Amino acid sequence: MKTPMQELLEWARKFKPTPSMIEAKIVLMLEKEKEVIVDAWNSAYGGDSFHDGEQYYNETFNTKEK
Image (cartoon, rainbow, N blue to C red):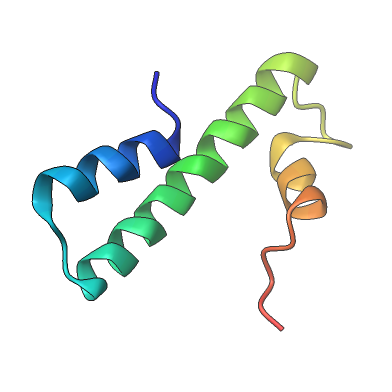
């Protein structure tokens, strides 16, 4: 399994993207990254109702723009 950054680098080398293509790809990769983190948390800790992967992600990573 490749990390999101490895996938992004491979994609950029293959397609020689424009800035708008890069931005769109990064948005998709961020969504994938979140899914991987949430799934890993839930697999490791069972995702109980008090501390699930979604809560962990939101508390750990500052995803709200200021």
